[in-house]
Length: 244
Image (cartoon, rainbow, N blue to C red; front, top):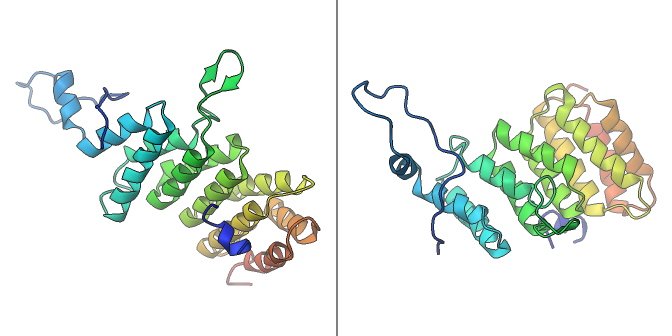
């Protein structure tokens, strides 16, 4: 059972070459020649090289190990917004099997790992930064798994940004899609409401008619649990911000 559901319902592998190599420092002495491939490779953080290698593996367990390593480093304070190299790794894992697909033959997707995507989305919200927000918005646009979407919207709430209502528009689209279903996902709806409240608190309200309509749909939708519908009514008031 994944993280937000309780609110409602109750080592190392051989290193491969990096995908991209950084360029030579502009401050290099004119007397120094360009760095060799080996020197460029060794200049990269060892932990990032390990995590990147694990994340690129075709094995689900190895990808999970990469996420576990990121979690430990994050808790130890070794990863912050000042570690931009980690966001592309997490973005790739958050889109594994959706925006980035590997197919067997002409149709079968063989790299769809919802739990990997869910964990990567969670970590993106904790790492933060504009790159993390862009990656999470991409998850909302490409994923169909409710547990992944729930984690992505909750992570966007943690980030709290909403320039030009971009984030709230995306959350509203997710909610409208759910409310159009006979059996909408209660956990996804609740996580979205929590995210909207956080964004409203961070931006002194949310002035977005798409969001208001989406929240009203939840409040009136009989297929949602009563707790979710009551939360939607509460969220409507919190969208006004502190000045209302």
